[in-house]
Image 1 (cartoon, rainbow, N blue to C red):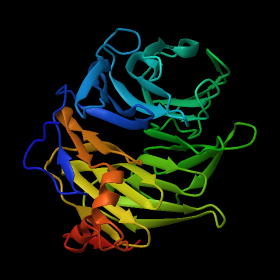
Image 2 (cartoon, rainbow, N blue to C red):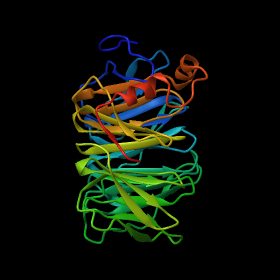
Image 3 (cartoon, rainbow, N blue to C red):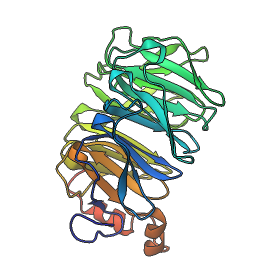
Length: 333
């Protein structure tokens, strides 16, 4: 694979060649590796040889509509995507087929966010637009069936991100500092965040943890049992995306910002080779990827390879966490 710059050390982020200069908005992990969506309807994937390639460059409906959001099924076999002019569809990574469901129920406004739970062929969908509307969908075998549109915010504030936990509970954030979750009857419940006074950008949920990123470099952590939110001052710039794998968290943001939290360690800033805004991140048991403005793709090496090279060292003494100890910024967890 062609790297931009010197060969990276294990655990560090490095820039790789992108097949497009268009801005990426979302990246997800699948059974076929990472996939990312971008302006003008571009979908790209990381190939087995490590190079990135364009899957298609004209959107689900061949209309060049920008794709702003992507989400994978729980088994990683489908990538759903949504974007401008009602663009909506999925790509089956096992059959290499695209499926177009643009403008469901006649909705042609821009979809800003999408969330998926369940395995391919039996998934539950949520898509949200710039008017604060959320459309639920259900797949039972083949085609999605669409439910009733609702407005969790009530005010019509934009919903920039959605998340779904494995048990099918959906979460929505808006640009007015509110967070909502779905109830048993598919209604929405307001769960905070009181006095946030900052625009939210991304939400992560896994059944145990709910995390929200925001302007001013904040991350909010939700305690479901106490129904309490705790704000964390992580970065000095807006954070745009967050992901979790096992006991590790990674958040990315403007000006090439990447922060990491491992176990009970503090949030620490990670070095990156770019000043481009980073919009989304995915971490997994393989290659970790963050994407952003003007075709920027950063990777962090294969986790199995990291484990081999760090051997039996205790957590906190690997090459990755050693760099953490010399980072220029740390915050409490």
